[in-house]
Amino acid sequence: MMDMILNENDLVVGASFENGTIQDYVDEANTYGLIRIEDTTVNWFLHNQDDASDEMQELYEKVTASENHYIKNDFGEEVVLFDKKGTVSFEDFIEKIDEYLDVELVNAL
Image (cartoon, rainbow, N blue to C red):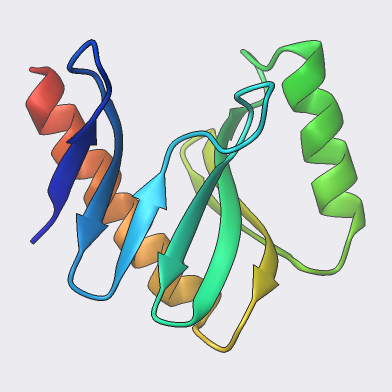
């Protein structure tokens, strides 16, 4: 179960769950978030090639040039993970991000 974290405007900005947390944005430019499961962390963002700003495209190119990244493509919308520190698998992170995005989508309806 996920508990949504809301900002002062009651917008979802993250969530906490049994063994971790997820945040939408952790950088000044609001381009990527952070997820923690147990003692492992990874940065993440959603990327759509057709809709990406120059800043997001630049981040995408930088991340994909490194070896410490993982991408799950969902019909053009990519979940991009990078700079993982720890032992939890990228797949476990994807599972939590998918769950978070599903809950966020339901709350938006």
